[in-house]
Image 1 (cartoon, rainbow, N blue to C red):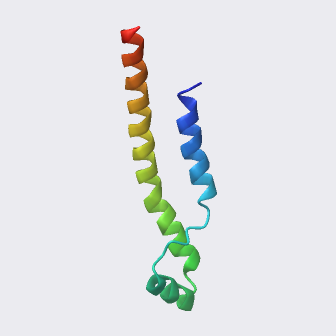
Image 2 (image 1 turned 90 degrees about the vertical axis):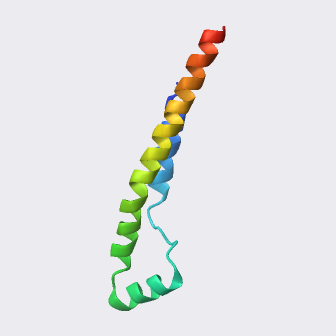
Length: 74
């Protein structure tokens, strides 16, 4: 159960990042003029997904190793 909590948090963070409004003002202005704001938001989410998966994987492995180490000390 304790291992499922970090995975659940990563998934919830991904669900709440539906609209990525962290573009620079120049990119957003250029996209708004061409009508491509949805494409830029989708591109940001596509680039964000692998980094979140890597972070979640490293966090999962670190917590798993910590649990294994705690069990060996007991």
